[in-house]
Length: 130
Image (cartoon, rainbow, N blue to C red; front, side, top):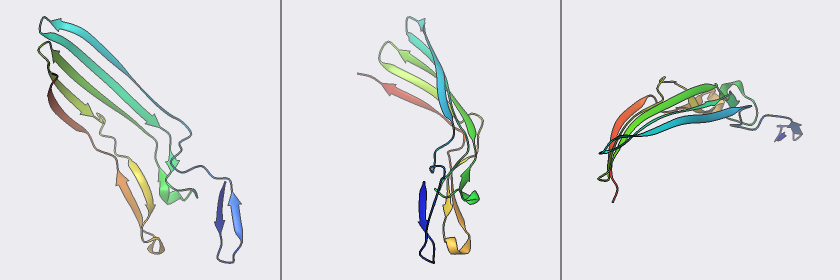
């Protein structure tokens, strides 16, 4: 329940969805590791996350509705017996553009502030375990 005072002083209580609480969400992944040679092992990974739409505020304001999304990521890594490792990765493979926040900014002017999730990113990482 959400309670809010009106300008006349009355308190209004209503059943509302909790902010940032989707009806459903899920995540998962698959990782496969195998010896690649006498040098080390190869690991391939794929994972995903998905979530239904939700509101960024407690009052169900249409301006704060965050859309549902599905994102997936992948990586390939090689771990050398000598302790070195190399990993190539892609995050947000589908380059899904979604908001992580929508909320009033200068509310009296009707301006909504928006924050986006990270776009597709990719890279290479090198490490050493000792």
